[in-house]
Length: 128
Image 1 (cartoon, rainbow, N blue to C red):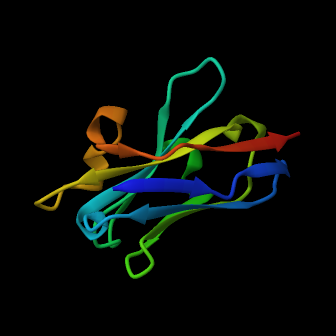
Image 2: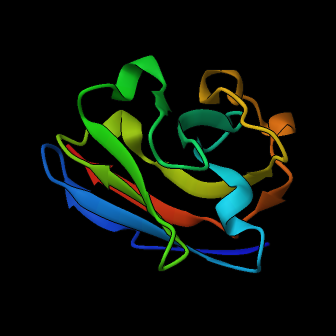
């Protein structure tokens, strides 16, 4: 699976951005998908994940109620809709794929080592 993230940019606090991750390859439909972010000087952290079917999602506590992850299997894309953005959301955002033969609860896919493939990242800057 090859992943291409896009949609980053600069926005004021309280604003919104929509990140997209385009996936190529035949295994997309059999992959759980996740978004991570990495702020300067910090480790990469989990943001959200969605199951292979799209029916289950998981979020990091600080983004619950503000971010929404979804997938379109027909288009091989995963979207992260980010609302009510805060300066602390500033980071490079990465999409990732976890190929699974069997269904895996997305609540267990919260570390970088859980994922097999990574995109190149897109920068989100939120100004106060």
